[in-house]
Structures are given as C-alpha cells and as structure tokens.
Image (cartoon, rainbow, N blue to C red; front, side, top):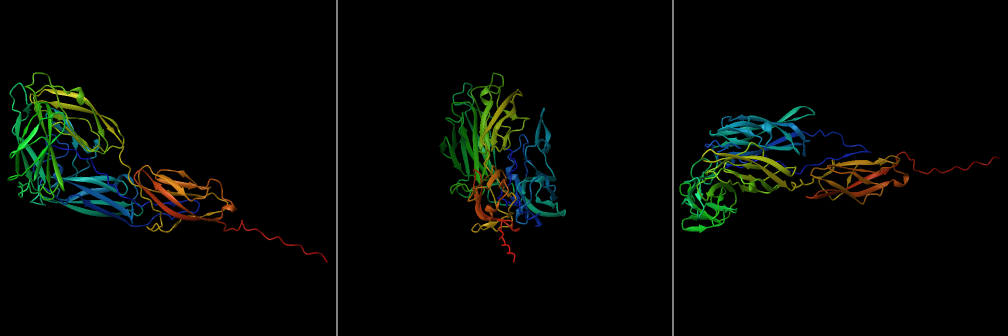
Length: 521
C-alpha cells in the first residue's frame, strides 16, 4: 500500500528587508551566500522490495525514503525567491544505492509505465535535479535501491552578484540504522476476500492475517515482551459488526499483539455489510513498544473486500463513489467499493490527484491534500476484477478550505533584533512628499500604523507595505516623529517602533529679521 507523498514546502521565518523612499535606502546587500543541506533520516533500509512512489502493486515506500531540506542565506537573511534553477543537486557517490525524486505531481517529473494493458504515470527517478527557492529553501527526496551503501547528495547555489558557487553535502546510509526497532510493517492474508456474515454462498467470513515487522537491515523484529503491533478497523460502511481476533482477544475497534520472529498473527471476521474493510497497522519505531505510548509511528493500511455472494452481475463503480469532499490540509482516507464482479479488485488511474493524495491498487485514496486552489478535481477511476472484467468512472474530488497562512516575519534593514527601542528610518526634507516601503514574508499580509501623524497613511498592502504623505510637507510638519508599524495576517502579528524626521536643512522655514532703515542726516 502506498500513499504518494508530495514534496514538503520548507517554511521558515524569514528576515525581511525594508527599503525607503524620500530619504534613500541602504543599497544592495553584499553579505556572503551560504547553503545548508540536511536530511530527515540519516539511514534507511535496503529497498529489497523495489518500492517506488506511485508504482502499482509495490509495497509502502516511506521506510525507504528520506526528505532532504535546503536552506540558503545571504548573511542571516534568506536568499531572494527564485522559481526555477536556484539550487542544483546531484548524487556524488552511491549511484547504485538511491535516486532523487521531486514528488511534486508535475507531468514533467513523471514517466509512463506499462502495467498490463494500461499505461500509468509514476514519478521519475533522477541523479541530478534543479529546484526553485521558496523563502530561501526547497526540499526533495531520496529513495533507496536494493543495494547497501552510503549515498552522498550535494546541492549548490550561485550568488548572482559575483557568480561564486556555494555547496553543501548530506549523506544517507542505506542498510544502516537500528536493528532493534521496526522500519517497515507489511501484511499478508490467506484469502483475497471474505464473505459477509450472512452471505448466501457459504463463503468464509473470516481471514487469517499476518503482519511482518522488519528493521533497517530487512531482518524480522520480535517484541521485547510487550505488545509491539496495533491493528485497528477504520470505521466505514463495512466496519459495523466486524471483529479482530488474536490470542483470546476479540475487539471491534483495535487490538495490540506481540510479534514472534517478526510475525504478528490475527484474524479478521466480517460483519453483515459488504464493501471494503479498511485495516490500519501501527508500530513504534522509537522503542518497539506500544504499551508506553506511540512516539514515532510507522503506519500501513490494508483493504479486505467483503462480498455477499459469488458475483453474478457486471462489475460497476456505484454512483455513491463518484463524489467525495476532502478538507484541505487534513488527513484523509477512503476505501473505494464496487458492485458486481469478483474480488479481489485492482484499482488505478491515469489522472493526477490533488497534491498530497494518492490512489493505491487496493482502492484506497489517502494522504493529506495540500492545494493552493480549493475546488473540484476530476479523477478517472479504473478497476479490474479477478476475472479480468473492467469498469471505468469519473470521480469528482472537491477540496474545501484554504491552506493555513505562513506566519509573518518582519524586521527592518539596519535595525537590531531588539524591539525595545525605536528604529530610525529615512528622513525627508520639507517641501517634498514622504514615502517609505516596508517588506515582510508571509501570506495575506496587511499593514497598520499607530501614533503616526495625520498626514501619513498606508497606501500599499501585501508583502510590501508602503506609507506616504501624499502632499508635499510644509514648515508646520517639521519635527521628529515616532510611531508603531504592524504587519499581520491570520497567523500572527509583528510590530516595530520607528522614528523619522521632517527636516529643514535649507533654512526655508527660519523667519528673517527685518532691518530698520537709518534716518538721513
């Protein structure tokens, strides 16, 4: 079972620069570039199953994947955003032990793969990739192959001001890591489907299931005395009345069992309804012990079809499956069902699901949607039964809700990090208009002034907040001013106190003293 993981967007509070008008600005920064490359996992197991993202029929590939994060700065500030080609990354050693993936769902990063009589799109594997810069950062992924070894990845960034190249490296060990804690959990069962509890063809209504736990070296992991495998029935239309049985335990929700030589055995009994029973298997990578809480879960899903009778009708996808509503940025799972045909059923699609969601060959749509544009997404569903019969329908996945705003980060160029004292910004000479522009990162930023003179207003919103006087300033406006500038959105609010002056360096506002003519003698 696979959930197609989309690339994570690296979000970090960014140092914001402000440039002034009317009085000039600090000019172009000459701070040196730097780059940092880090990995979410420093070791992954050998990928003996050949699991790859989006590959139909392959096992869950998450244990074999590490996410790599890039952060590049100019001094302490993130480098400017750049949509394409900001970073160049490649595998410098261990080419036979892993490949690089974008996993962003874009067509140009996928390849066609023949599966039986159909062609599906799957993510492409690379030795070299290029990425754009978002708030100075980016992320991509490495997935191990079936060969042990150290995989070293190098990323570089070029300073456009002097064309100097800065690099950093990260190494992921394939075949290393813990031998006492689980890295994968897989499932096998002795029947492709079960009958409902009261089915009319005397189809067995229970199935024996084995979950297999293996460590980073692909060796079986036994329990240390406490339960180390949790099995749960995910509530859906077929779950009512279904039961889990193991070691004398019977439960309609979840059970915890211990593995012996890496194998945990249990049985699943169906209820009165047909459909798809959805099981969730969970182990704890932190210490291989569930009794003290789950600290670092590894999760696998499995689908067990439940049928009322041996199929005598054509295979179809019911209308009830063709419209689903999904909450943006919230975990989602739904097991598709069919009518007619003969189980087991093989599902596929040639469509691109909303970013963050994937369809498994068992008919499980799962993941966490992460789309900037909520709305309806059309997905063509294909299903084939055990007899080779096929059916096709169009599913409309409606993603609702917006992504959370990125937090506002707002500082002023040339000011210290302290907010206890006002920061001086550009002054302006009397007789001219005053304008000044602040910058911030974050989504949907709005700006506000507190304590500002009545002639000064906010005239620009968004990532750049511009303040202006409009009309030229008069002698009555000559003074030193202090005010608070606030940048905010739905996530947070940041304020800084600033000071500026309206000056009269030419002395145009100084009154002259008239002279008294000398009387003629």
